[in-house]
Image 1: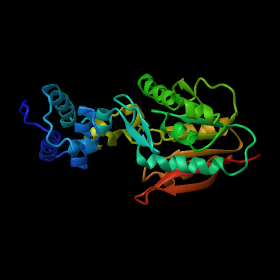
Image 2: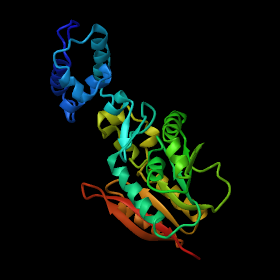
Image 3: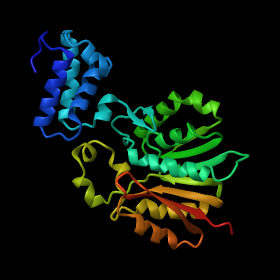
Image 4: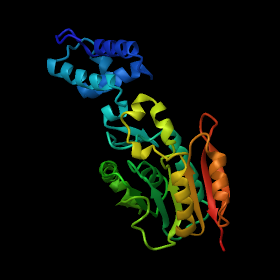
Length: 300
């Protein structure tokens, strides 16, 4: 790309689209190109075409080149945009935090179902393992009132994004009498009082260690391995969550889990080994793969 005044926003879009295609980068490449140009020039995607004949300054061209170079290195688009949408909520993301996936919205849907099973006259206490960007508690908080979250996360980098996102939506949280307590912790280690939760939720790391190097380059090279690595068979955190549910759920409480597309039966069998946890429901994702499991702790 030459640095001169003949470059207009649509020409930049065309150049980026062609170069991304030539480099074999997957995705909706014209849309990516439009988002990169709009972000670099601090304009809307519509303005790209409304300003079709406006030459870009050398500084604007430099800003575009810097973003495009990062994308050529397969850095995820969400990191370049410093934002990702989840449950229609724009969330701050960047290197060090997992990018929320559309499939995880099913975990939100499943949790809403159990929250709404009965008319509540008190706060509903939810414990989350691995909150990342705080996408799940924030999504739930936009839909329900009087939710009390305790969300743990081992990564200090991820917690920076979680705090930023909670601050962004703090007025809405306060309006709905919801609160999210963040704890930097390895699993639930600092939480001593048991049992005290109506629900435990998690989208834990579930990729088997040996499979991580086979993932798309944007994931394996850029997203935090802590948020991906589920151990030798991918099930380490489900074993832990089974024990946590037995100890930390109130009688009648729920355990709601996202899992890999091929892990449904293995996790169901594992949880079935606990006499105190009963299968309550499941959900499939948009590709018709099993994706979410719900268990309920027995009353006795």
